[in-house]
Image (cartoon, rainbow, N blue to C red; front, side, top):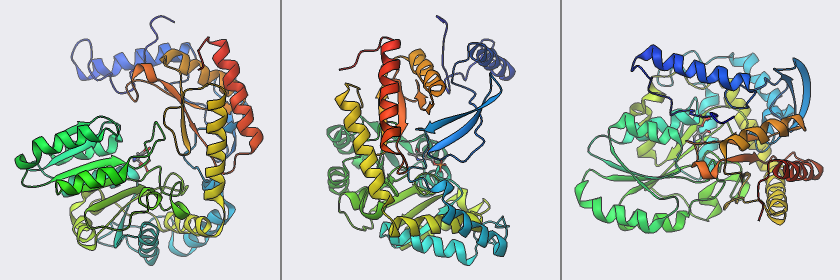
Length: 421
Ligand SMILES: Cc1ncc(COP(=O)(O)O)c(C=O)c1O
């Protein structure tokens, strides 16, 4: 128990300095975790879709179990929607399972074009470009637009894909404390004259581990004063907040602007896979050539595009976004009433703070035994004193699912002697 250690990304150096030494050190650590049944490196495989209720195989007992899912990014429950599945099948029968080429050669059918138009009408921006993942969209946006002559200023909690894009671009990177606009302004004041080539400020719209929303009106105000560009990662905002799931700008009632670039995911609330950038026509035309994760990579399969189109149709024609909002608020209030620390969550992501890596792992494992899937999140993804369960609410959860989760958490917090407020 005492030498319990999690180093999901920190384990990058070996005792003897060699490549294989590093690999073998990690193997040793994995075996230790596996022998202790910690719920960290290996998960039980599901044998059903990542829906409200799932069935999985318990790896240790080799038997099938049911659980209610509180760890899926498919917030609207669309990844297993019959309507979406049927639209996908129809399209696959007509256009095949793969696109057969990169977007600028043979990988573009009318379905990719239609999806780009549909995303632009959701975001309200001039044009959009598709990627095979949200990760690739962020990589392409940052590395396509910036070079070593630029500065990029990140919110400290921005997603890893934005950081990786920065490394690829060679741009100088600075980070401001999470949602701390005084700090952002200080950085811009000190650096604007040093970067005549331009500065890009980047923030997640909805933060993936905290579920809070960036203060875009205030950030935009500062960004415009210093004549920078602003990029917003809409991964957990698209389909979740704003009118008809239009995202962070819609939530704040801010319209299209040439100095804003949006990136987003088709893999989360929209339930499928892929990513996008929405921006001005000029920026999109440029990125179709200079975003290398688009230009040099086989395009999103037509069947996936048809699925996303069907998801967008359901968002417009049903009340799923409202139901997600209702469920998220209900659970948030119930957790708060029972003294759980949930930071400043305002969306479908609700962090339940535990503050101890080992206890987070054990609680996640016990919760599964009691019938709910909850993801434990540790250092270095979050600071050690803020290790947590990351609860993801779905539009398809029932009131009794949400009540059951809270009562399981109360029991487990008591079992592991964790204070509530
Ligand atoms: C904020 C954020 N941006 C980008 C991504 C990458 O998206 P995808 O999983 O579609 O590659 C994620 C994924 O978790 C994310 O949380």
